[in-house]
Length: 243
Image: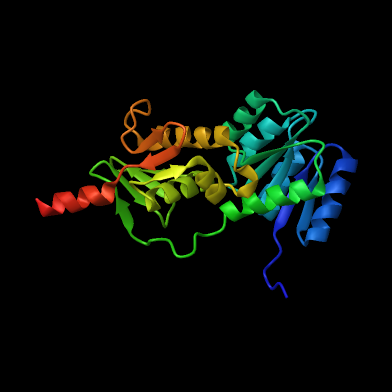
């Protein structure tokens, strides 16, 4: 018997039929569902109910999904999946830059939507027992795994949940090449195993936060055609201690 508290999902779409379709299937999956028909209602529901995840339509009259997402990000870190009739890459990147966690293109099947929701929610689950000390990479960079922050030259910068998971797996395997498929599966789930563009985008986000010069990486290296490798800071510390 499942004793976990059901997750609450806010469905934001100006089409009543779409809201009913999504709500019916989410109810069958055991989620608690909230509804909003426009951006302002969505903001009110996010403030008042703090949902665990938001399904947000891109093309709504008045305040569109992008502007709604921007305002949601000012008040909440809840994961957001954008719903769109277009699979346009520019729109997708715009949404991810604003803080979206995934995209689902209409029309979609209940099975696909459910799979994407589970994958995104997994990213927001605690990593078990995180190392509760600050991991020192070098004199310039430390990573606070418990607070999900990086400390760059003494300044703390917060990581998005997906950025944190990606950096966590890179650090846990420092010095080793992590194949694209492995990182995509561990961070996003099996559904994303071929989405190398998504991985490149988040590597770029991390480099912008931690690298002194993102175009000449010091910490996250690209292994062409294979994957990515985090600097072997543990081996470096061993060498430093032996001097």
